[in-house]
Length: 148
Image (cartoon, rainbow, N blue to C red):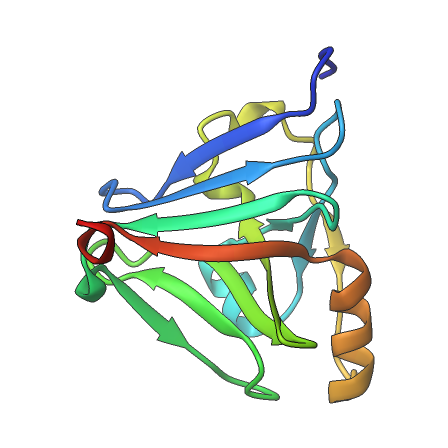
């Protein structure tokens, strides 16, 4: 898919209480990766990002999301507390919040090419942070209750 302007992709969890927006710097869809870890495999998650874009996770109230960590403990998987969909994965890198979005939350999922398999087994913390520094999207989390 191509267009004349950079893309702005939107989506949400199943119940709609958590929404995502990925603004890209590109006119084409970013490639998706299907991580082979047991969490991503069990949830059927596939992730995409654009290091030149912006990722915004929005939710209505603080109790709409749950954070789950495992492995190295440096990533928050943000899951809807109501329907259980993992929406984004985020972590701090050099005092910046960076993240990836689960393409299965996207409204236009059919526009994405099949996700390529990816394995990050054996990656140490420094290697993982370096990879994220290069490839993950600057992110922010917005809670409607906090803005009201």
